[in-house]
Image 1: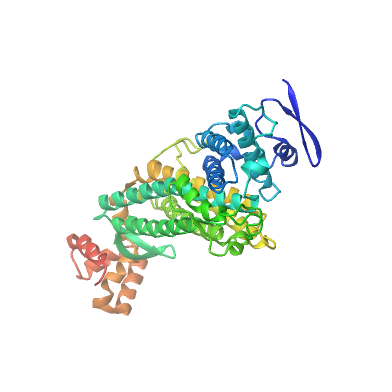
Image 2 (image 1 turned 90 degrees about the vertical axis):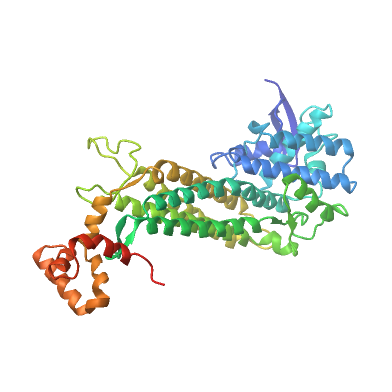
Length: 462
């Protein structure tokens, strides 16, 4: 292997000749070793950052800041990165301590060296295409990085939404399958009133749909970006006309409307848009986890638990207890919520901790948001495919639990009053009989009518 020498304000750095990144990235590798996954592990962010650089080159070419051949070479290099090329040239840890400068420079250096190759130069030359003067023209880390983080979340949004919609659809199908099956509605883990399984599954589908709408609204808001503010919002260092040209360029390369913030100073330092998205993601994952926790209880084995649901057996549950099958998918969904909740706390702290005109903790915000969205997307896919679709209601056990519970007592309240029904419940407990049997003995209804009465009671009042 042969090496080249690059120089910066701190001195000389040795790099392999064929490496597309430069001295700034090499120093980041030393400074941030062990700080987690590299930039290449986040494909939507890679794509977003390359598209931001592409749009900047287009805008700079339009206002005369870049010669056409240089701009075209930068655009081609960016297109290669968008297509997945040169991924091994982005080793910088996303969780880096320079407020995103190392990330921005990793892109600037790779794009500059690749553009130089396209124009006939060797990596490290920087005579025709310089990382700072050309690729970073009219920009700063402080506007380019948050713009890319925001738009990476926008790019990730559709895949997350698709999996949540699939989960919602699976719940609605299950609701239709079980719309006439009775169950015990419970409050405080005690029997409350009769309801149907269809109502149960539709209720969770509705909650997920509402939460997804809130997530999508928060994602939509991230299409307003600080690009053009350069370092602190003044736009100092950008070529005349650049701010006017960059929004249309971003909109073109991303294939959607991208807006510039009305107040660039607000856009530079405030991270509330990230906080809002994180909060909505936390809420979405909490709704998934609530359903998952219920399924663990409802699917507890019939010999020692409720036994009202049969969850799909996806893997053996114990290394010592033969035949045991655990609810591993719902428990995974619960753990995803816990992890998402932790990331949400980190984002809130990072957003509040930003100082003066920028937030230099955006690398942590980015990492946390990307993992939240990835975890929820994966969890929703598995929850639907490996749990909800295949779960079954044990209709007989479910009805028996209802008929034997005090949950049927509310059926008789209107006709008999609270005092008499309480006495019936006390007698049922003393004699060890289901309350429904006491109702039959007292002539309130026949045994054959019990199911119809309970089913009618499960219909919401007008």
